[in-house]
Image (cartoon, rainbow, N blue to C red; front, top):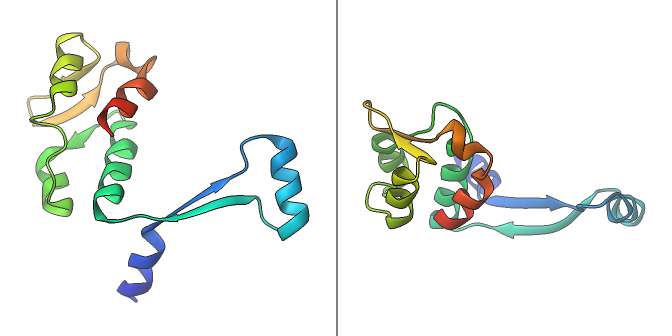
Length: 114
């Protein structure tokens, strides 16, 4: 059902980051999951933005707004700074993406956005 799908997509699950923690979690519970979080609408939108910006095609701001009702890019001061520094670009079709130059610092770019 759509309610079940919605509940599934509103959760963020994290596995243990190190091998020892991973193995301990599996030994204790049968799973490597160390945390679960239910995300609200805004947090889900930020997660979607991060995932889309990791792709070379980038984010279509109109599609993103239609789906989430949030504009996280066009008026963002950080995005404007990153564009000026050549780390992000706005394509003629209205998509935003991280440039090849920005890929080496993508985690920093994304952490500033959220």
